[in-house]
Amino acid sequence: MPSPASSGPETETFTVAGMTCEHCVHAVTTELNRLPGVRAVTVDLASGRVEVASDAPLDAEQVRAAVDEAGYTLAPPAS
Ligand code: 9UX
Image 1: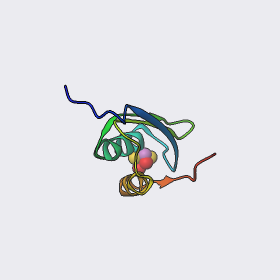
Image 2: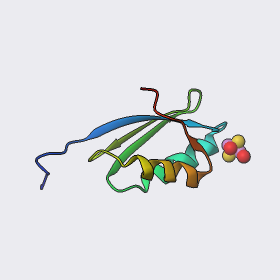
Image 3: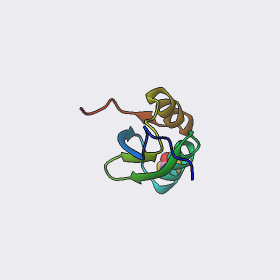
Image 4: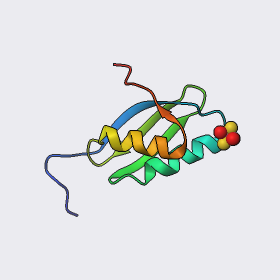
């Protein structure tokens, strides 16, 4: 089972604006799951918080593009 020495599972949290129903959640989840290395996507509809677990750090522009593709807006990082 090959595993890169330097990178382990990463979890990053984003905020997505505009999601108002479970279909929105599904759209965002589906698009983010298409990104390379993504293992799991968890969306909290009420808060708009999106957790993405991946094999390596995500490229912010890819995340933005995926959220955009789904029809929503990635909020600026809170910190
Ligand atoms: Mo329905 Mo969720 O249009 O956007 S998918 S509210």
